[in-house]
Length: 95
Image 1 (cartoon, one colour):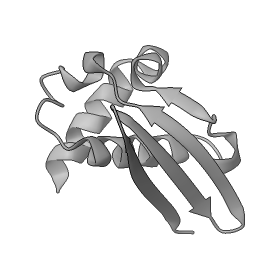
Image 2 (cartoon, one colour):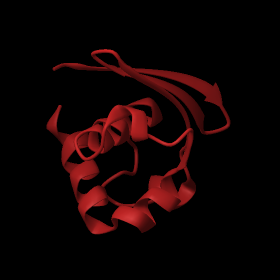
Image 3 (cartoon, one colour):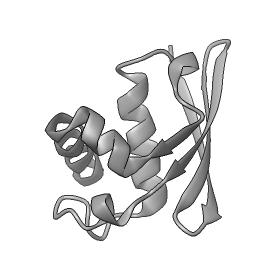
């Protein structure tokens, strides 16, 4: 089933994200942090794209309804570690 991800920049490195997969929907606020933006594989990437690819990473690993209402990318990087950061780097260079 296709997943719809809509990212709305709110300013000051914050984004509102709406995710839909079939009947399941979630809304989350994501804060893009300098710790992630400064990583070599991420530097220079568009924030909206970072957020979109981060949510795509998450929905591959958990149901949409389990996406938390607020996500800080430093916390996410700490929780998932190198697999998240390496996957994000690949996703950002793939397109």
